[in-house]
Amino acid sequence: MKQSAFISALFVCLLMFTLAPVPAWAYSYGNPNEEAVAENYKQVAAKLNQDPPDYSGAIQVFQSIKGELDMHMGPEPAKVMIQALEDKDKEAALKAYHQVLVLNIARRMESVEKDFKNYEQNKLLLAKARATYEALSPIVKEKDQALDQKVRAAFDEALASLGNPGLFGVGIKEPDQAKYKEKKEEIYKTLQDKFQLKDIEVGHFKPGEGPGNTANAKKTSTGISDLKNWVPLAVIVIVLGFIIFRTMRKRRG
Image 1 (tube, rainbow, N blue to C red):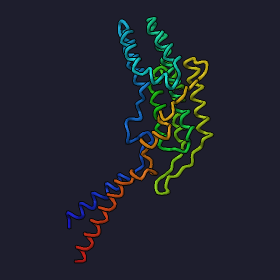
Image 2: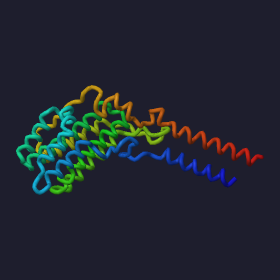
Image 3: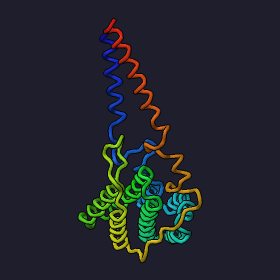
Image 4: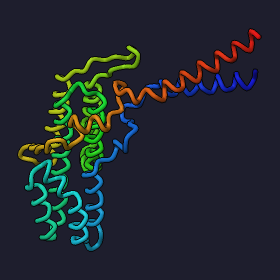
């Protein structure tokens, strides 16, 4: 009897854990708090901050991300970056990469609007945009801490504007696309002014590529609408029901 009660309690705990709300920036696939472009920037900056700066090493590191930048932003941003590194102009190279990061934030945030009601996918895209901002945040904060807080608050509000599909009809919140656009433009304007961009050109996606596309959404979706994501919960419910059934039979016996 004690063993059955223990097992029942264990599965109740597992069930509660499964049904617990998922944190806004948490995902089961990869690490949404990392963005390839931002991680590459950190590596390039580390090369440039050596004494003396390692320009050849920085070029080598940057080449690994160049293809992605060309695909999404066109060839010009990477061309400016490579030229600055070849000229051994550290300040120009860092400025160019800061602008690339702003463009990457815009790319991610624009993709959200392509399928605004795709909640799970848009959380990922917005997380990638915010992860990119995390690489820029120390530069913003160094000169203006209030501005950094303003950008962070705008990201929080943009996330809230995505709404929430809820679970079992509980916690549903309708998306607010007008609010999202407002916060997106606020982030754009702030970063455009801070990093001296004439305009924000977000480039393009090739068909079937990029996390905002339907093909990839099917591969990476962890939303409640995906039936395969209900399998663990179904197994827990079945096993729990079986244990409760056996326990009740023993008590009657």
